[in-house]
Length: 257
Image 1: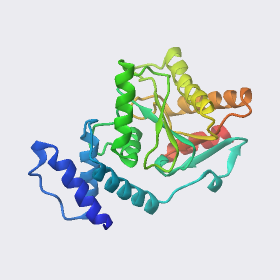
Image 2: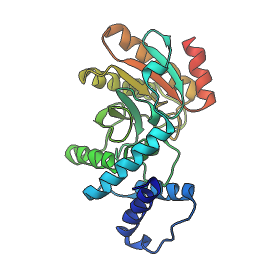
Image 3: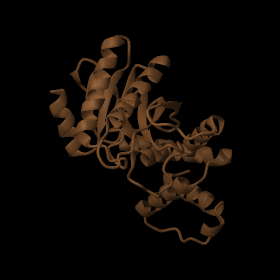
């Protein structure tokens, strides 16, 4: 099965299981088809899916992953002992775990092709990630509080696990409690990674996007929390600060020296 054949199969499957979308036209252009597939997967609720779908989805996503290129820790140079800085798409990193800035529902982003990291991670991992998150939340029976962390498999991502954490949402002035919760996000992820004996964790810029935490203050909290944890836990994981925007890269570069 070619990649284009896989793409069309997945689109037809997701379209046909959603009655209002069955008559939707499929674009001829490949990029538009990829956007349509991502959109259909984004809006799909966590429900059972066929083994055939998963096999074809996994083959499709893994080929896309390999085409985009995988970045390993050995490709990077530390900026401080145990700390790395890398600018790029976090879904390309083959660290032991990457961190997802989740929302309190913990099911991923349902907005088609939204540019948030939650959407990017779920889209690259595949529908099984939402299914696993749904099982966790059904058992928990309440929304995920800010400052905690959960761990799931990574499925079609090049990393081994995904750590999900909900950062504080800023409405107006940043409070002491907001800063404490953001620090808790980093600490909770590191504690969970250590409990699973993970050797490397890649952090996104938690809370700085849709949650409106000021980028510079968030970076200061992130670096301080990681450095304090590493001082107290000599066998703790190495950390990659992953940034996507030039603005964030310069902030971290300045703070890390």
